Length: 466
Image (cartoon, rainbow, N blue to C red):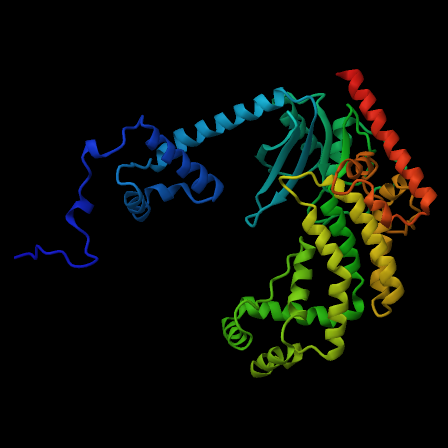
C-alpha cells in the first residue's frame, strides 16, 4: 500500500493538480496584467533573459510559489502579442515626445557581434519641459558592405520615418572614415582644409576610400561631432604603441592574464597562492582602459606571493624584476588621468559634453608636467602629447591655445562652439577650468568674454525664433 504520509521536503499531490478557475486571477484583473507586464519588461527586456524562460517548468513553479493565483503567459503569447504591444506603445511615446521637440541630437554607431552580424544603432536626445530625454530610435541589422553611402541612406530613412527633418542640431559618430563619409553624403559637404586622417580606426572594419573631410557645420543647421571617448581612445592607443621599451613588460602582464583565464591548472594555483579577488582582467583591443586595468591590478599584487606562484608553476619567465615593477608603476601613474577621463565621458543619464574642454586641458597640463619629471617614459609622454594636441587641434584653436600639430596626428571633428559654451553653462565647471589654461590672465579674461559673447548671441537668436 502506498505511503499516505508526507515526508519533509516531499511534494504534495496538490502541486501536480491544476488549480481551479476560482483560485486564479482573471485575465482582465489588474494584478494579472501588472505581473505579466513586469515579467516581460524587467526580466525579458531589461535583463535580456530568453523568452523561452516563461515555458520552463522550474520558472513556472517559482511563479506559483510567488503567487499561486498568477498564470504566466506562454512563449507564443509573449512573442506574438505582448512584445509587439509594448513596442508599439513605446514607439508612440517616443513619437509624442519628438513631436513636441524642435531641437534634437542623434548618435549613430555600427558594431559587429561575435557571430559577425553587424548592427546600426541610432539614439535620440532632447530636452522637453526642462527635462532630458534619451531614446533608442532605431536598431537595425546592417548587412553587406559598410559604405558611407549605405550608412547615409539608412540614416536618412530613420530621420524621415521619425519626421526629424530640420530638427537635428548635432550628430555624434566615431571617427571611422565611412561614418565621416556618410555625413558628407547626407549634407553634401565639400572638402575641408584639414586633412582626412590616414588611419582613424581599424582599417579592416571599413571599406571606404578617404575622399573628403567633414566641416563642423554639415548643413541644415546640423553639426557633425566626433565622439570624444573614441577620440580619446585613439590618443591613448598612440601612446601605447610608443611603449617600445616596455614590450617585454607588457608581454609578461598579458601572458599572466591569459594563463589565469585559459589554464584551469594555473588558475587553481594562482587563487590558492594569491587569494580571492586578485584576478588579473583580460585586455580588450577596442577598450584601451581594459589594458590599464590589467596593468594596475598587476602593479598592486603582492609580488613576493606572485613570484612564488610563478616559480611553483614553472613560469619564472613571467616574474617582474624591480625595474619592471618601477616602470609598471610609472605607466599606471601616467595613464591614470586618461582612465578617469574615459570613465567620466560615457554618461547615459547626464550631459557629458561639458567635461570635454576641462578634460583636454587637464590632460595637456598633466603631460607637460610628466614630461618635466619623468625621463624613462619621455618617448611615450611626447607621443601622447603630440597625439592629444594633434587630434584635438581644432578644439585647442577654439580655446586660443597654441598646440603642436605633429605629422601623423590629423585633427578630428571638434570645431563646434558647443564644446566651449557647454562647460561655462554647467555649474560643476563654469569657468573654473580656465585654471588649467596655459595662457596668462589677460588671455583667460579674453577667452571668458569670447565665450560669454557666444552664449549671448545664441540667446538672442533663440529669442528671435521663439
